Image (cartoon, rainbow, N blue to C red; front, side, top):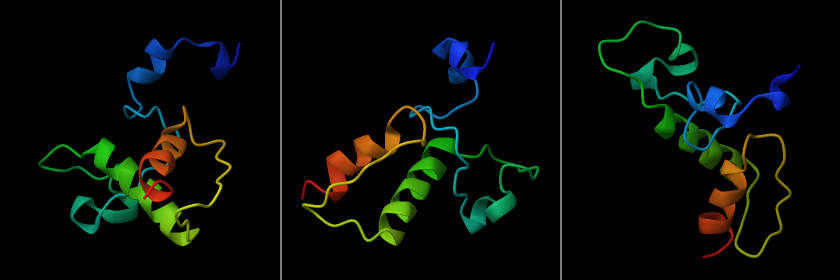
Amino acid sequence: MDAYDQSNDLFEGFLSKEMMYSCALWSDEEGGLRGDLLPTARPLDLEAAQMRKIHHVLKMARVKPGMKVLEFGSGWGGMAIEVGSTSCSR
């Protein structure tokens, strides 16, 4: 049995709402690169960290409106959804 044989219920327990299983991008205020490993007084915002990562990847890839983007391997399509709703549809 591998990860693809598991139901979404398992992954919803520890992944962001986009169900992204690649590393989030934590801000300096959240502890930076090791933000999810450091003890903190306030809970970390996984959703914001995942969106920060998506926007960073799109910026580094220089995605512009009208471009076609092939997205694979970032989870359940969170990056593709963001590309369709923001980066390429303006």
